[in-house]
View (cartoon, rainbow, N blue to C red):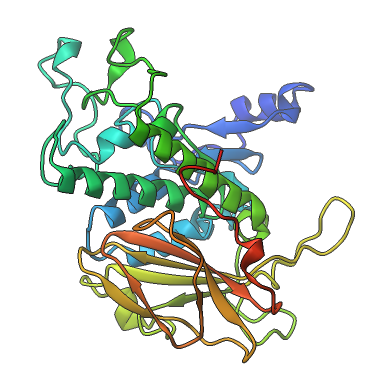
Length: 366
């Protein structure tokens, strides 16, 4: 009854216009009123802000149970929303925050909105934010809480940049911009909404982390796929183009997918099974990556999946210790994944030393 008319006059006019038909068409696919939420329902030429991606990622990192299945779908490009209509993974504009709602810093600092300054008795703005403050509402000097919040920001940003689809960041999030809990600052042209450029040492370190994760995204074509994963062996390969793993290193079962208590997930992305070509017509081949996510509060020994005898897993990133030196691990080794943290590993099959792994750190990454 409230479906988008994909053949309607509005879309016809845009698709036939000599100028508009050549630009990128991005929908914010929701509005007030019944039937206003239309994520996944726009025509082929359109990309969409993926609100389902935002909510699934937020819920997972705040520790909600029973969301790993939804999270997996969102991490891999949301094929349930876009594949049937002939669209590709880049139809999904992945985001955690936008102009409406909490900033990234506020998302990990407030359980409730604080819009009193808007003059509407705090009745405006979204009430369901899927946020978690780490144990204290708003500003605090508690080092434990601040450490949790910093790690959660790294988790959210890393998840965004390492998901299949087009990542969209809200300006200022890379520096920890806050609106002091105001999630509807449209009417605040003042200190509440402004971006402050006199950043602290902690904010500078997060900016370095953001740059680092962006570089990981740029370096690995398996994260920028233009086709959906099939979850099967490609061209006779021994491993799947994507595999979902539990903490034992085995493939996820129906029971694990549906368990309300599971808050961890492993993803193996096969860089040899991209099945795409570059602008020169050459086949695209990249590194195979392993993403490990632990949304629970307790550390978890994650068994690294099987590899060929000469292959090793090299650590690329760990949000619990973002500047740690590269570690080289074997299949079957247990990687201690800290609570509320995410790790990324690269399959090394070139018998090379660790020179390729950049020496990242707060002092030298600029």
